[in-house]
Every structure is written in C-alpha cells, then in structure tokens.
Length: 386
Image (cartoon, rainbow, N blue to C red; front, top):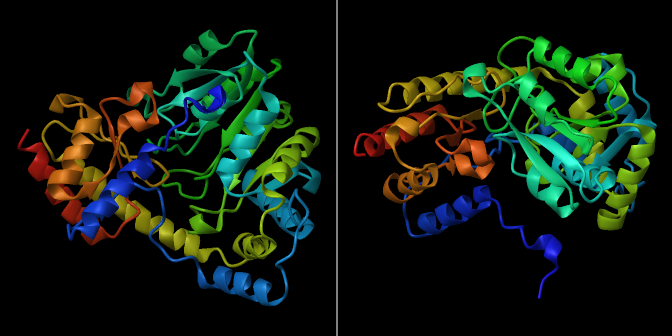
C-alpha cells in the first residue's frame, strides 16, 4: 500500500509523548512539560513587530527559493561575527527551520549505499532521513565519561570508502555536550584529505554555558566541505516561525535550493524579514535568557543528582539534561511512561535518541524554575517507589 521508502517512518517520540500529555491535561490532570525542546520565552517583541510590519508592507508574495538576498547578506555578516569566516550569499540557503536544511542536504549528497556517520545519542532526524535517501546510517557513540563528546578513534575505525557524510552536533541535543577545540582539531585533521562531507549542526551555538562557541569551519581546509546548519528557533524563541539556514559550497547550495523549491516553493518572506531583525537587531536579550537557562540547568541537574540511582552530567550547552538512570533497573521508556501517568511529568526516553541512549532520560529545562522544582519533587516520588 505504501512506498518502501517510508516503511521506517513513524511520528517522533517527542510528539507521541506530547499528544499523550495533552490527552491527560484535557482530562484535568496537572502536567509539567519537560519533553519538547521549545523555549518557553516569548519571541522578542522587536522580531514579532518586524514580522507584522512586513505583512502590512506586502511581503506576502513568492520569494526567491534560496532566500531573500537581504536576509542572506545579514546571515553572511552574522556568520562572520560568530564564526570568523567569510561566506558569500551564494553559499547560504534559507529554509523552514534547521530540520529542512538537514533533510534536503542529506537527499542532495547521499546515493544508495553511501554511509552516513552520525552521533548517538542524537536528535532523531539524522537516521530516518539517511534511510529515506537509501543511505546506510552508522552511529558513533558519544561516551558519557567523555562528557558526551566524541571518541576520535571510534570515528576513525568507522570510516570506510563508502562514507559520504559525517554529522557532528555541538552543543548537542539531547546531552548538552560540546566538542572541545581538541575534538574539532582532531576531527579536522582526520578528515582534511578525505572526500567526505561534514554536516555541523550548530543550532544551539548561542546557548552555551562554558567557554566560547567553536565551529569546525575555523579550519580552512575543512570549510569548503562543511555544511553549517543553523536555526532561529531556539536562540530567538521562534520555533513556530520555522526559519533556519545552511551555509555550504555554492554548488551544493544550488541543489539544496532546488529540492527546497520543489517542496516548499519558498520560505514565507515576512518571516525572513523577521529573521533579519533577529540576527541584526539587539542581542542583549539572548545573553539574559542564557543566564536564565544556566540557573534552570543548575536546579535541574542538582535536583536529579540528589536522587538515588540517578547520575546527571551537568550540560555545557543547549536546553536539556540527560541523566543516567541505569541504576534504577527500569527501561527508559517505562520510566518515562510512569512519570507521565503517575505524577504528570512529561519527558522523553533515551531510546528516542538512538540505540546507545537506553538507560537515559531527557528533560528540557525550558520551563520556569517553579515548574522544574515541582517536577523534581514529583520525579523523586516515583524514583523512591521503584
């Protein structure tokens, strides 16, 4: 009945758990949402005002598929400031969120049988999109003992003559881990002379609690073969506006644009105008919100680490805690279901993020301090009953 290419596709666990939580809420149950990686902050007023003005100014027609030139110029300036590299607007593709850039890029570079190396645990888009492209997904482990960073020797051992793409993500979803300068330099040295694309998912680049953000594109020999994936959803609290972009080789940008046009025609132009205001407008609110996330992170991780059988590495970035629950002796999905059904805390099982993620749970701290503290009280009640 259905094409074989979609046999592996299912709704993500995030939206499955969200749907179940909404059903319980409709029945009158109190639910604390710690499952969806969505900022609880409002979109900054200057951005929403820019979108409203753009609508009134007539930005409701078709736009260039690659993105408005003025937005791509703003992105080029932003990349120069944040990554220290020069890019032209022909290297930039605007899309409906970072997920669209990941999706179309994998379709553009992967042939049947090509291998894609990707981190595990990871955001749940890399593997199914690789399979959709008839590629071969090959996960590499992010060891907890290394702060959920990479093991360069493992990556080296998994590269073969069929490897076409390696995906990295820093700061990382779901673990909050980051790649150190040494990680990036080791990886750059390993891949320097190899004919392999690198996709660098940098969506959480502005939500960083330790040190300064580093991109693998700082290494000149790597820049040309690297695809930066960025999004305005997390940093600027714009998830529903669906605005992201990719920075890549111009020839690849042409193909990614072509796929995007076939699917979406264009990204709504009034949203692109809002994106210009986000990237070029005042940035102080980003730093203020990052400090709020830092406080919430500390409350969340300290609370989890005070519970018997739970160990939680303090994340260096992003908006997630990823505690180790192995000592509790219960599968992560079973625990996530008990937390939702028994005490109304909605989180996600580690298995939603890969085969190496059993024994972990993901909580987002994109919620208020009071809700996080109440959630911790409820979680403790379940943990102590096991």
